[in-house]
Structure formats: structure tokens, C-alpha cells
Image 1 (cartoon, one colour):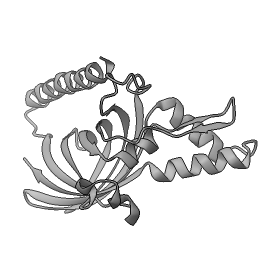
Image 2: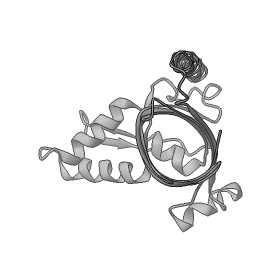
Image 3: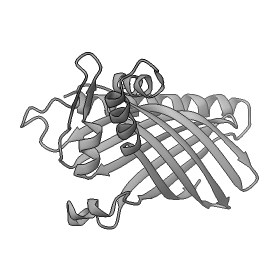
Image 4: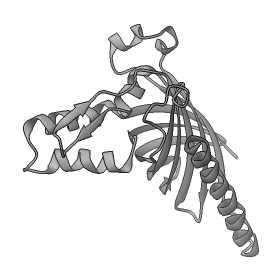
Length: 221
């Protein structure tokens, strides 16, 4: 149920904030808004991964909806269809208390990302940085009673691109973690001198596996 409710709540908040912003800008008689739609492509990071399933061989696709306002602020919603190897990485668990690492579920999944941040437009060149939350659904998680979908994940995204009138191309790199607690734990094990070598190695591997690079074709309105 939380897997369905969380994205709906995020979309609702997104839809409430945008009309309010548009109304405020209309009163000022200034057009400061900018909608965008995009289709993204994420290349595979390992040649052996393509053997998992045929639909992965050409990489991953994603849908993007973005909105800029007040010159600088940037809000986005991105939706990914995830292959089993990435779901397994995102659902793996690193436990500091017991010093153990548990592998995740090797199943396809669906990820919604909701981010806010800033975007700088310098002529035809742009750069942005966003943070946000995500909601992960794993195939048959409710039927098989998997221990996923009960926590809100964390995102960090950096990107840059070029705009040509009504369209543009952007390149992004996203760090996607299945829970805020997991993201904090990974950072602590990487930077803390008190972390043992096994936990530090596992944290570094989890961080690298959850990095998602994308190239996106964007249409601006």
C-alpha cells in the first residue's frame, strides 16, 4: 500500500505547489516558469549484465517531467523501469550493528524519483543539482511478502546540458539509495575512520552500483 500511496502523495504535492507558483507569477505579470518533458537513456555499466535478460541489452529508458520557477528553483519527477541487477543492488542491506551484508532481490522493479534543487542557465548551457526521495516497487513484492517498499529512498543528482530553442540534451549522474537510513550508513562507513575494512568495502561497492548515469532528450515548453 505504501508503494502506491507515497508516489500519489508526491504527485499531489507537486500539482498543488505548481499552480500556486503560477498564480503568484501571474500577479506579478512576469513569466518565470518553464515546463519540460524528457526521455532518458541509461547505458549498462557491465557487459555481463546484459545476459540477465534480453530487455536490458540496449540499456534503460526513463521518463522525465521538470519544472523551473523563480529563475533558479527546479523540481523534477523521473520514472525508471529497473532491471534485476539494479534492484538487487538497491535492496541489499548493510548492517553496522551486526557487521553483516545481505544481498537484495534479483527481480525487475519500478522506481519513481521526486527531486528539488537549483538550475543555472547560462545562455544555451545549463547545470543543476537536486536532492529528493524515491519510491521503489519490486515485482510481486506484495504477493511474495518481500521486505521492500516500506521505506522512502534518497536521491542525489548532478547534471549539465545544452539547450537549442525548444529542445535540448542533458547528461546526469544520480546516486539512488533505497532508504535514507541506508544512504547515511553508506556515507558513515566510507568516511568514518572507525569503520572496519569489510564494511567500508561493501559501502563503497553499494555506492558505486547505485550510481545511474543518463543521457536525456528534453523538450521545453
